[in-house]
Image (spheres, rainbow, N blue to C red):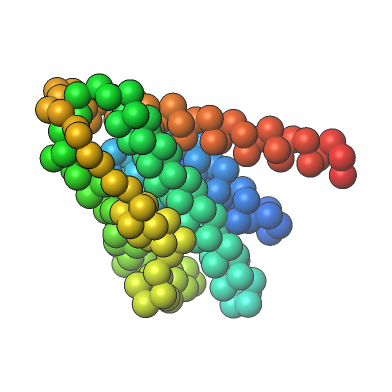
Amino acid sequence: MAEDSLRKAAADAMKAGEDVSRRVRDLTLEALRNRRFDREGIRETVRSVTEGMASAAPASAGSLRQAMGQAFRGMDEALTKSVEAGEQALRQLVATGRSISDHEVKEALAGLKKIEEDFVATVSKVAESANERARPELRALVERATRAGTETGRQTAHLLKEFTFTGLELAGQFSVRFAQMASGVLAGMADALEKSAAEKKKTS
């Protein structure tokens, strides 16, 4: 999804006024699955979604706070899925025994650890140039996330605590394989969520 299309989709999700969190989560996941699994791709996605959110901020203060909070939570949920996808990809690569070095695994874990930091920093950066209605709310969300953390950060902390690696051998092209596999896992997660949403609509 192109940046302009992503911004518009995020704005439309805000204007919908219902299921904002789910809408933002789904469009964020869709954007992430179509980009390379790396920090730049994630930052670009967060930036475009946040800009779209800010451009469609409701005029009512109460509605604004609620909608922005839901949208931020939707992005957080999508990025949590990214961390989970990275974890699954890493475990699969290690399990296959494809010559991976201890250093490469640590680098991959460090990259996953940066997702929350990049998420919050990007929203903070967008806040500086956002309109007067959206700016205070975005800053409040950043402050809250900095103080209390995000679900993305909690998932990453769990991963770093749980993940162990032993008997790994040196390998080349690890980052490429890891990014490709993580993208594939993330696409599967996005498909599963879409299928679940479609089934719920049929039964409702």
